[in-house]
Image (cartoon, rainbow, N blue to C red):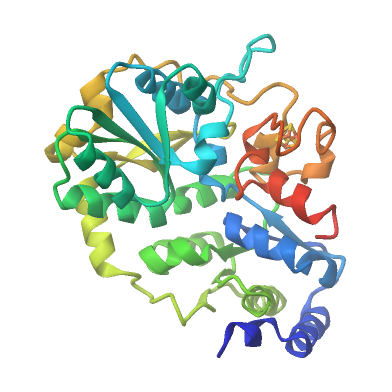
Length: 371
Ligand code: SF4
C-alpha cells in the first residue's frame, strides 16, 4: 500500500462507522503514549471524527517533556565548563529547567549558549561522533534524551567504541514502566492503550504483554497514518465490547512480536535499567537507562561528577499544568495559560509547549478540543 492509501477518506469513513456501531455507550478513554501519534491525530483532526463518548488522550509520550529539570541543570552546568562541546537534539535546548520556584528565571541550554557555552544541535548520534572526531582537544558530551527508539541508536554508538573524548549524559526513559504507573493513578480511568509505533518497532510487542494479562487492558500497536490509528481504536473498542483484552499488533508492516533483536541485544549490553524521575510525574522503578560500568569511560555522569540536586522536587512551575497533561488528566485548553501571551511556542512556559512532540505545542498548532 502507498501512504495515500492509509489516508483514504472512504476507508476512514467506513472505520469511523464501524467504531460508532461497535462502541458501548459509556465513556471510553483510550491513551496513546507517543508524540508522533498526537501530531497525526491533530493534523488529520481524528478526534473530531470519533463518537463523542470516545476520548483519545495523550500520555507521557514526549521525551523532552518528561526530562527532569535536574538533568537539564546538569547539562547546563557541564556546557559552561572549559573546553566542552555539549550536543543535544533541537527541542532540548529551549526547555526551561528552573521551575520549582516562582521567582526563579527559567534556565535553558539556549541561555547557556548565549552566555558562551558551545551547545550544538544534532540530528543523530552519529553527528556527535563526527563532532568528537573533529575536535580531539575538546570534551564532547551528548545529552541524550529519548525513549527506546533513540536509546537504541545511542547504544549502537557506544557499542562501536567511539572516540574517548565523547561521553553520554543519559536521560533516556522507557515507555512500559510509565504505562504501568498510569494504571495505578485511580482517577484517570484508562480503557485501552494505543502503543507507540516507533518504540514497538525496536522492542516489539512482548514487553507489553503485562497490560492485557495483568491489567485486562486492551493494548494495540498502531502506525501513524489515519487508518492505522483508527484501526487500532476499532480493535480496542471491539475488545471492550466483547469483554476481553489482548495484545494486538495493528502495525505489522513495521513491528514484529520480538522487535529488532539485534538492537535489543546492543541496548541490553550497553545500558542497564534504573529507577528514574519523570518531570512532573515522579520516580518510576526501572524506567530509565544508565551506561553499564564496562562503558563508564563514556559516561558523562562519571567523568564530570556533577553534584546532582534533589530529583524528587516538583519541577513543574506552579502555574503550569504539564504534569496533568502528561498523565492524560486534562487537555491543553484546560490550562489557563494555554495560547495566551504567557505560554506559546515562542514563549513557552512549560516543557509541553517547547517540543514538537509536546501536547500543548501540538494543540497550539492544530487547534482546540476538536483536533
Ligand atoms: Fe504548561 Fe503552557 Fe501547557 Fe499550560 S499551556 S500546561 S503553562 S506548557
